[in-house]
Image 1: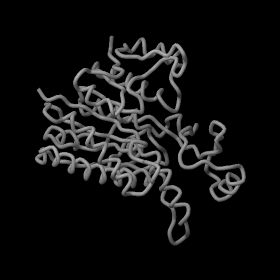
Image 2 (image 1 turned 135 degrees about the horizontal axis):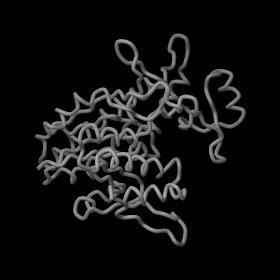
Image 3 (image 1 turned 90 degrees about the vertical axis):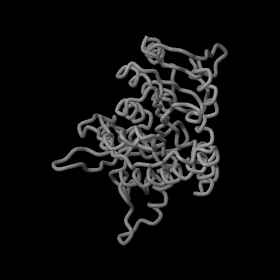
Length: 315
């Protein structure tokens, strides 16, 4: 029986200290190579999604630098779609190269720019919280506010000020019905990049909104909609920890929903880091009854062989 796995990659797995296209393509070549063991010699269909935070931040800088009446900067939803297509292109090339290297050139590859429906009444629109783009000092913030009065800026952990935008929860993926037969046919598919391009329903169709959807919550919704057997969220560490970086830190291996929610209530997971990953994993397990694992890209082969990582289960 074919096993279906949705893999969620962070945008920082793509961006290196060198932000050039070639450097990011090389990083994805390495990423693709590390993911191939998931499907090589296994009856597995892999679906990949990814973050795009660093890439959107860089694109915003480029757009602002060139902004003029004759060359206006694009709205945020369009920037998300642009980077989704950009990374999807790079990932498709990387997967094709890796598959050919491993004698698996018969596996088709595709990337789909994906619209993700959000609720126009989501409270997130009234409380922007997702930081995007670079850090600014107070003088720069004053200039930006004069040029962009609708921007909301917040101080970020003593490192400067950043623009914050709404981060509504994903409700459904417009292209889900188109993606499903591709996966069924064994296409190695990259979808919902950067959480997907946020849209709201309007009469006769959809309309983009200036927001950024959390990649992990979108991955959980994608995994549910394509009937994935596993959700695999890849991050910088092999396991989730409680009391992280303290003398009594404890590695979590198999954790029930109830246990994970208890740790959340204790404030064990950082809001901008591990918390959304654990919450997304819980959401998937609650809605499907199937497991979700949080681990690192470097641990993928051990995950395949031994099921290592932090595995969240129903009970």
